[in-house]
Length: 413
Image (cartoon, rainbow, N blue to C red; front, side):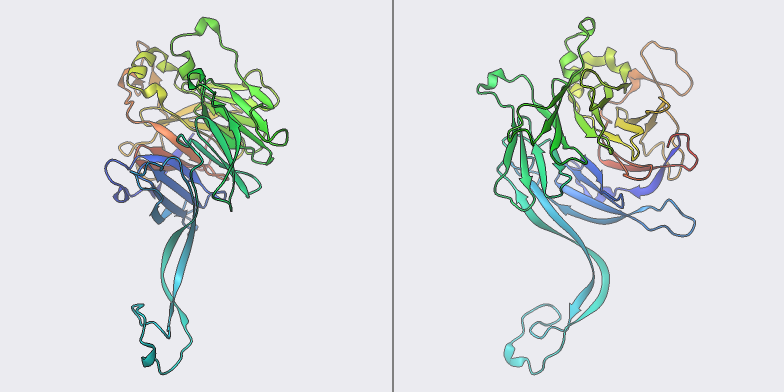
């Protein structure tokens, strides 16, 4: 695997010291735009530059930044906002009732009429709020998924999933509610949810118990009864104090084909076939060397970190993050895997990334191996995204954004 760093960079001048931690990163459906959001409520948008001459790997240019939520708003994580982003490269001139500064003229001074004209200007990005969807969630929203009908979307928190129409802001329809009558009887929470990419009636949600529930909105208005339950039987001999914590699913993603589900729990990434509920089709160990560290990871709360996962455009490779700014890729066809590092210290633009290897405690080390005891658990790759059509990936490493692109003639496609 030969991925290298492109010229796409995130300018930290936009961010303050405390609230600059990136909380989401996503390509648009064409891959031409890339957006990041941070815990300060800011959204930064980048646009891919057009190809110039022989430079087939064009960099990204900064397109705009806007503040979606104020960091101290109590409803920041419970409110959804729809924004319109547009460009303007012309400005109107020649108003009859306004002067050049935009001030209203005295009508008595207007002695002639003129036709306003559009004059060229430097390209400017304008962002305006179009919809605010509020007052529907008691707990923090963990997932938003737009339906394939492009008219509705759903939002999920720990206990409920709501269905919205994009044109209606004052009400939503509750489609899943797992809140018990007595909160002391609560045994699991919703961790992630997503619509099927092709069938607008299907969606899936994951739970803290490691289960996946596929629901069909055609069967009932309230989807408390699932159509399919995906769950892997637990090995009694491997059960420990941490079993329930590490089995919690932090992310679930449909494949582009809609045939498979990709999930991430604390130690593994799994691929499920929609036609096989009893066990995952494939299981990939992300950082199995951490099993001996679960006690210390519990004490420093790292065991509760929520790692995301992503498919490549052809559903043949999956990607997810790890600690020490490492991220992992698994080829489903060849069963090969690789560990790469997103780091400013070790990556120069267009330099090929070298595979990294972590050595378990007490294990035999090679020259460039990194001991599990040397890992920095404050550096973690939680958020990743894959370009829908090309081998271009976006990696959020705390407050830094890295864009890597597959080098030509690489071994993994």
